[in-house]
Length: 330
Image 1: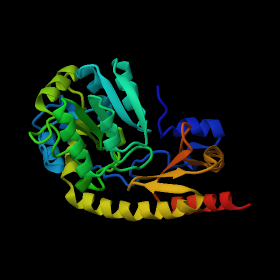
Image 2 (image 1 turned 180 degrees about the vertical axis):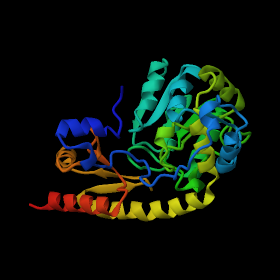
Image 3 (image 1 turned 90 degrees about the vertical axis):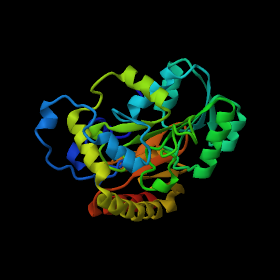
């Protein structure tokens, strides 16, 4: 199993700090999640089924009805490589590690293109190009028009462009989900998740947008009842709540700017609305320094990179600021 953020219980045991005393900034999940209301009893007692409004709400939110609900985008990440012919995959890296692992397990060959642009990835002349936008963990972005042009170029040679847009909800204008699997971009595959922006990681709800034939294959491979009834009900309501979405985007924009300003004295910072990536000379030492103070961040050992999520309270912000100030002292 690969390591992910959110391993708070492991950290609590390792550093001998009670679970309740931690400030967990190790994920890019919105700390102020969509408020889940009481749910009807029926969603607990009946088998989940299509026609409950989830697909309709998702089509309206994402602007595309060529979709399939999945048990978190992770389910699609694991299945998709099994449904496409084995070939060479250009991965713009570093990226979310579950992607390359899934393609390798399915027998594909990978070419890792470190911090590459999309034009550079296209020049590798592989049938598939895979990327995260915004990228996890570096926060790099690929402009929408550049990504759409890449899909068109790959189409000409019979290839596919796969984009994980798990962190794009705060800037929906940058998304290509509305075009995936349509006549304009039939070879474009886009993954989305309710875990990050909506803060509903525990519901395990995501979507894949792709050509209908590929969606049919995935639905058949997954089988029935892949998303629990309560999760479907919550996801539908969250996708319909436009007022909360607008307020959340405004709040996250301000919070991400605050985090970037807090970190900029400690190295190079790139940020999305949901996390900041800090490149620093002493990543291991800073990670340990904060952990011993009950602040959990994510360290990426293959590069000098630390990822910081957003504090969920003013106390959390002050605690992080104080710890970083202590770190700066000679």
